[in-house]
Structures are given as C-alpha cells and as structure tokens.
Image (spheres, helix red, strand yellow):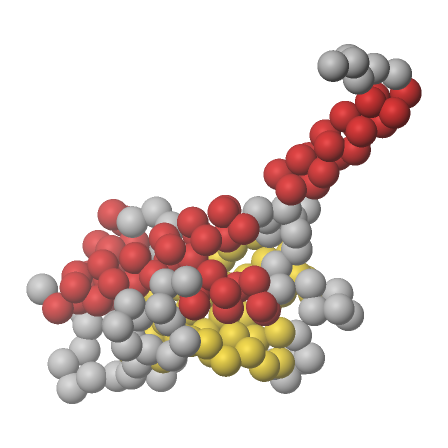
Length: 161
C-alpha cells in the first residue's frame, strides 16, 4: 500500500487538528444546549426569553430537582442567542418554619460551587454561575449542570436536618 505523503496529507492533518482544537474549545452557551444538559438528567425544561430578549430556560421541579422552582438566566448574549455565561437558580418558597441564616452560612462555608441565601421575600435560593466565555464543550457543560443538580439535592437534604 502506498504511503500518504505530500501537501494534501499535510492539509488533511492540519484540518483534522483544527477540527479537534475547535471541539476542545467548545461553543457558546445556548438555550438548547443548556436544556439538553438538564434533559439528560431527566429534568424537563421550557425554553423562552426574558424581559431583555435573552434566552431563558425554566426547569420543572421534582425528581432530580427537589425544589419549588428553577430556571437558568443567560448573560452576555449576542443577537443569535449565543451567550458567554449562565446563572442556574433553584429555590424554595417561604415556609412556616424558615431556614435559619446560620444554617445557610454553614452551607456556604462548606460548599464551593453553589451558594445559598435568603432573598428579600424570604425565598431560599441556591444558585451557581457558569462561565462559557470562549466556548464550552458539551462534556464540560454536562459536568457543571450535573454538579448544580447534585448540589441542589444535597442542599435540600441539608436544610431538612
């Protein structure tokens, strides 16, 4: 069998390397890619837009997302709806027995990726920022969404103690 050499082989190798580099660099965040990452965990989503015309993904609570509500806000978006960052949010409506701030603070001290707080209307919120600046690979996005969903489940168990 003849050995492949020459300019065409070099061009093919360069094209392959560029394709691999592009795949490693990733893509901007889109509502569909984020919805797909949550969907892979069994969480139903609804894609829409927020008051500013940016993408918005509503998360259906229950099952893997043991909260009263959840959503994803998109930031730094272009006109095509491709964005540099997202904020994943899950929350709990005010309860008769509120979560004490010392419990929230304990969570924040012990956990790195997801933060918890009580908002001005006494909702308990957990959220996590994700930067996709320069692009994010599907594996990296799935890892971060899985981390968020797992942390939300851990937080739900934590506040019940």
